[in-house]
Amino acid sequence: MGARPRALRLRGLLRKESLQILRDPSSLAIAFVLPVFLLLLFGYGVSLDSKHVPIGLVIEQPSAETQSFLGAFQQSVYFVPRLYPTLQEGRAALRTHAVSGIVVLDGDFAQRLKGDRDAPIQVIVSGTDANSARLLEGYVQGVWSSWLEREAQARRIPLPVAVEPVIRIWFNPELASRNYLVPGLLVVNMTLVGALLTALVFAREWERGTLEALMVTPVTIEEILIGKLLPYFVLGMGGMVLSVIMALFLFEVPMRGSFWILAICSTLFLLAALGMGLLISIVTRNQFVAGMIAIITTFLPAFLLSGFLFDIGSMPPVVQAITHIVAARYFVAILQSLFLAGDIWTLILPNAAALALMAAFFLGLSRRLLRKRIE
Image 1 (cartoon, one colour):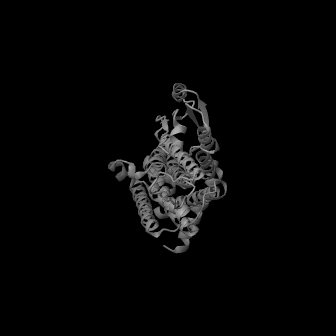
Image 2 (tube, one colour; image 1 turned 30 degrees about the vertical axis):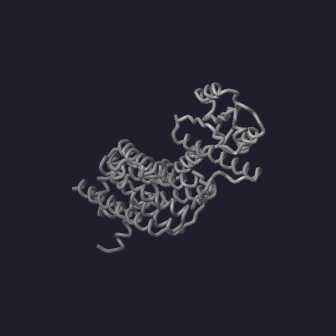
Image 3 (cartoon, rainbow, N blue to C red; image 1 turned 60 degrees about the vertical axis):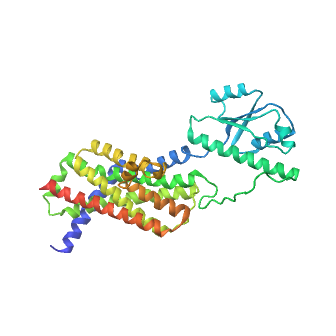
C-alpha cells in the first residue's frame, strides 16, 4: 500500500474531524472556556494565605507598653485587632467566630517587662480550622518577636535569645500560595480538558453508528486513531498555551525554567490524558457514561492525589502508592519546578519518563482494544 493513499486518507480523516469540531462548539468550549473559567475560579477563590484576620486582644492593665504592643498588631497586614476588656468577653467572641483567636496580656505585663523579667503572653486560637490555626499561631509569633526586638533596641538591652536563626526561603520567598497553586491548577485543568475532549469521540461515533461505516473503508486503525487524536491534541495545546499566558500575566507567577521543556512535558502529559480519554471512549460506547467516568477517574485524582493541594508525603502509604498511577502527579512536580525553581533535571527527567510511559500505555491499549472491538 503506497504512502500517498495513506496520506490522502489521513488528510481526509483530519479534515472530517476538524470540521466536526468547528460545527460542535462544545469541544471549543471545553478546550478554551473551561480552562479560563477554572483558572479564574480557583486562582482567585483558592488561597492558603490568611490576611486581615480578626483577632481579639484582652489587655487587663493598659500601659504604654501594651499600647505599643497593640500598635504592632494594628500595623500588621495579617490582623484586624479588636479590644475586649475581659477574658470572658474575648472567649465569647471566639465562640461566636467574631474573632479567630485571642491574645491576653496579664495585668503585670508592663511591670514584668520593665523589670527585665519574662513577660509571657497567652494566645488562644480556634482549632475548628487546623490549617488557619497553625497560620494564625505563626503570625502571632512573628508579630511578638518583631515587637520584642524593637523594644530591646529601644531599651538597649539584649534579647533573651541565645541563638537567633537566620531563615532563608528559596524559590518562593514571599510564601505566596498562588505561586504554587496556579501551576497545579494548570495540571488539573489540562487533565480534565484532555480526557473530556477525547472521551466523547468514539462514544459519539458508536452511538450514531458511523464508526461501523468508517471501518468498512480502507482506513487502518492507526489512521483512525491519529485522525481522532491530532485535532484534539491541537485544541488541548491551545488551551495549555492560554492557561500559561494567564498564569504569567494575570496571576504573575514567575517562570524560571525553559519554555521548550514546558512544551515537551506538556506534550507528554496531554498525550497521556488524551490516551486515557480515548480508552474510556472505546470501552464505554456511551457519551454520558464516558463523560462521567472521565471526570471521576481524571479530575478527582488529579485534584486530590497529584500533590498540588495536599502533600503526598503526608498521605497513608497505600494512598501514596496509588498516586503513582496518577499522571497529574508527575506533571505537577515538573510544572512547580519549571515555574518556581527552574530546570532541575534530576526532577524533570524521571517525571517526564513516567509521563511518556503512561502515554504509551494508554494509547497502545486504546489501539489494541479498538482492534478487538472491530474483530
